[in-house]
Length: 255
Length: 149
View 1 (cartoon, rainbow over the protein chains, first blue to last red):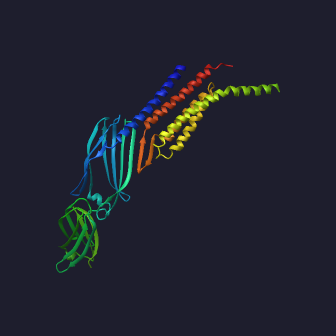
View 2: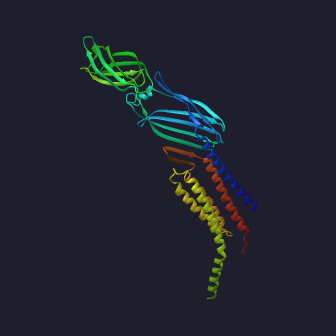
View 3: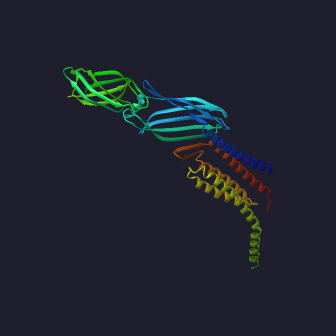
């Protein structure tokens, strides 16, 4: 009996030593991992092609700790007011101890997704960004760091207005002036479509052309195009689209 | 009258005999208290973002000191094993409660830091359960070795 009790005492002591050693060594591993230069993102590139905004670049994780890192996951939530516009997620399955993991990230948001945040294309505002990173050390301890902050958003069609709308019944042509400022850091290049709908939601005229607006540059242009005068009602709707995505709509009392 | 005198004399003698035991228990408790103080000084900065840490650590320290003193004071009696088992059971519940079932969250500097260590918590509980088993076996051995009336 006495030997059993003594063995139990040894087992308890041994267990507590293992637990303490594990916790202390994991803490040291994390301190090494948190040192500057052991994780990083290299020069991201922002591009806009078609209807897709892309942010891409290489990133690396240098696991200098004693234990393998597994199930590493980075999640970025982009939101506007209380609405989530986009969820981006990157998964790094396994980084063995003493190795460097090199990879690339590619975050892309379509114009349609941005347009769902109502005024994001036409008004500068602050986007809510929620970032969380989680990983597992030695397969038994899981860590998660998360934070929220706001990021200024510069609208590509800032202060978009349609003015000086006029209709000439004799030529059956509509004339109008469109202006906006491209506050974004990328140029706008693509198909710009102006459409006129009558009160029965029937398209009675349109005009399409390509625009090319440099970053941080203003844009202003007059348009004149034909409409079906017989289909006109007292109230028309003028709709503006860019590369197939509706960005602005306004009512016009033609009568 | 004589028996009362005898009883009061016996009590005094018992108290006098107990003084070294009390002093020894107090000394051991003081050493444990000192270790807990050093641990507190070393870790209070790390857990500054965890507001409940001070309260929980104070509760743990008070109970650890109480059990240390009690176990030392009741050496040579069956109560010692009762306190050993009680200490292990207290640690099981305390660890599970204080660590929120193995998931801790700390908020600070605009970040939320969450740590999940359920397997480690499992190991701690196993160690405490072994402590319960050790206390029970100790009690059984104590009873079996005690002279029968």
